[in-house]
Image (cartoon, rainbow, N blue to C red; front, side, top):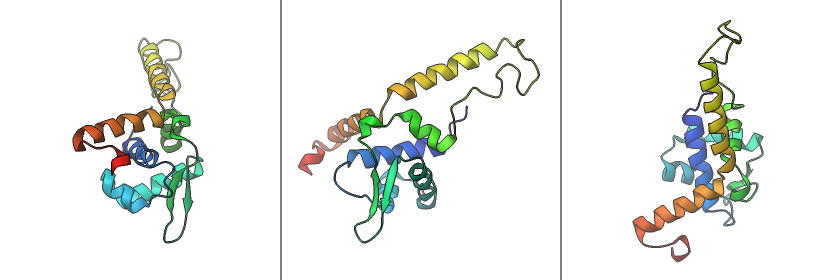
Length: 148
């Protein structure tokens, strides 16, 4: 189980798209600027998320990226697995890499930690995070997105 900048930046990008869900395509350049994500890296992330069916792309002057579903229907687990691969126990999983099959006291800790992480990621949607982000933005600016 490895979470990298791919997951962090990918989730930020989807929150950005989710906050603007229903407003039409959003350019990768705008997302990169707002979220401080290196543009080339964001392009790679969006390509992976497009392949996973989380975003769609449209070309042209008013093109960009949109979520393929309502943000409340996309779990954080889907985002992480689209960018990192399946969420699985660490390399210390009781035997596959170290040869201590069934005889490793640490294996149960890693297994429980992976299951707890899976639970949090499964029960948290991009929509939940979009709502939280909108509240943060409102507190900072004193306005809502509708007032802008």
